[in-house]
Structures are given as C-alpha cells and as structure tokens.
Image 1 (cartoon, rainbow, N blue to C red):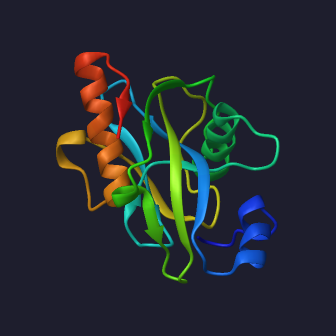
Image 2: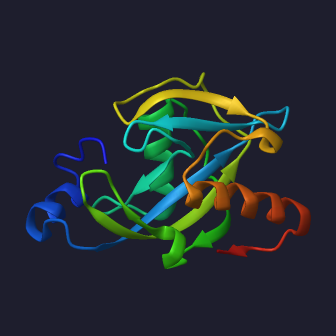
Amino acid sequence: MAGFGDTYLGRLRRIVGDRLILMPGARIVIEAADGRILLQHRADFGLWGLPGGNAEDGESLASIIAREVEEEVGLVIPPPVPFGFASDPAFETVTYPNGHKCQFFVMLFHTDVFEGEPRVADDESYAVGWFDVATLPEMLPNMRRTVEAYRRFQETGAFQMI
C-alpha cells in the first residue's frame, strides 16, 4: 500500500508488522453515461483496479467510499448504492509487494452520479481512465471479480456475495 502513514491501518501495521490483518473496507464501480467504468492504474501492484479503501476511525462503509473516491480520483459522489459484499479469502487476501498481508471484507457500491473530472489525486495511482467492461485492462483479481459481480447485479438485481 502506497504510504499509509498515520492512517488506522498504518498505526496498526506498526504494531503487528507483516502479520495478516483483517480489514473492513469499501470498493466502488463508477459508471459513466456510456456504460464505461472508471479504473485507476495502481502504484502498488502496477495493475488496474477500482477506487476504494479501508476504514478509518469512526467511519461508516458509505463514508469510506465517499472519502476514498475524492482522495483517489478527485470525484465527489452522493451516497452510493450497495450491490454486493466481497469476503472470499481466496480472492480478498492480498500480500502487498512490501510483504504486508490483509484479508479484506469489502462492501461493494456503485454510482453513475458524480461531480468533477476524474484525475490522479494522490500517490496511490499512476493514471485513471474509463474502460468498456468488455475490454478491461489487466486488473487485480478481486477487482475484476467485483466488476463481474456488478454485471450480474445489473442483470438480476440480486445482491452479490462474492
């Protein structure tokens, strides 16, 4: 994770070192009017992913994603709509290049309403861009599964547990 400094996870990491941390978080599919979705080219893995992040002290899942979207891609969003929950340890357990391990428990949100123009807004991304879901770039596996779950949600209206 690129520079987590004095975040909740950063403070916890200083205590537990590289050991596995169970971490609540949120991830979002932001969809443009033409159906393309917003992705960020992540600095930690060099792959594409969805905006999102981890809980800070006193945050709700919805406030996590609103903060992360503004911090990472410079957009302001209204309260997003949940469409699923990701917790499968086979996909949500991640070892970062620095050796830190996290198992994520992630509320999945979507929105097609936002203010601003997407931009790289912090040091966690190299680039941001809109992509057609049929031709996605190389992505982190848990992020690709989130996009697939979103497509199933769009087709069925059923909350996705992945």
